[in-house]
Length: 319
Ligand code: B12
Image 1 (cartoon, protein in one colour):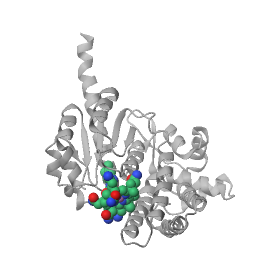
Image 2 (image 1 turned 90 degrees about the vertical axis):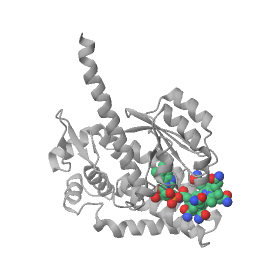
Image 3 (image 1 turned 30 degrees about the vertical axis):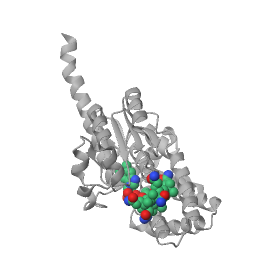
């Protein structure tokens, strides 16, 4: 984990991304027509405007839609559901904490008993009630941390840990289903050679895809030769590498340098930032929420640079 960012752990608040109506529709499963109707009739959505005049929706809008959908599924009329979603406190605020704590406890209980049906049902309820960002950052990541701690302390068996990690990993892959489509910048994600852990990388992939990145995920134990060949083929805007093991980072620092000379690279590894930046790669914070914000910032910079290039290229093209 990069040391510079350790002190900032948990200080980066929830992202305030905005999105167009198509994206909001994709995220919530509610058609754009119905979303517009709910905005018009009930004021459920409170869009801002882009410079070009497009309506932009926030994660709070997304949370309200999810809340309304869940209430309608519980039997309320659309008008009642919209009214409740609007007047209840921010569904992702502290007011919702008991619900989240309860779901986290139920998840722990279900997965400790190897009950996949109950585990999936809890995850279904969680994802219906709150945004994916909130579910991952506030519930699943803490749950996985705690699972790891309990495993290290010997209070859950290796079998329980494997069962739970694999079920959660499967759900994350489900959330990742369409991360290879859309998005103007491609991020190529890989764990270093010899590195078996990839759940953190998967979590990051899901979160950055929701911030506009297209993602190609190579996962655990990726050799550098195949990574380099894939970089040549896909021409990603960013390669994100990860390892839990400082010895693996040291072993492959030369290969990271070679890669960083060819393309933009960011690394999450448990070494001091200077070791990472000496390779020419950017050091990512170990906290996934913070790393998501950093990677989103890299995309914004890339987009600005691209816009600058096309503006300065235009007069030349006209000559
Ligand atoms: C699940 C797990 C496994 C699974 C991995 C499955 C998978 N597909 O990922 C399996 C069984 C394969 C595995 C294997 C091993 N594991 Co293991 N594993 C774990 C466990 C229980 C949970 C890890 C996890 O995914 N947690 C969920 C994530 C979200 O949380 P996290 O790990 O805390 O990660 C946080 C940050 O590090 C960061 N992060 C993680 N990845 C990334 C990626 C990016 C890009 C970013 C920005 C951030 C980020 O974000 C997270 C949230 O803040 C931990 C126990 C623990 N206490 O954490 C051990 C643990 C990580 N494993 C460990 C070890 C030692 C091993 C083995 C060597 C065991 C062995 N003797 O064989 C092998 C490694 C083999 C190898 N060659 O790599 C050690 C690592 C110690 C170290 N620093 O080197 C841990 C900490 C256990 C321990 N206390 O000793 N493991």
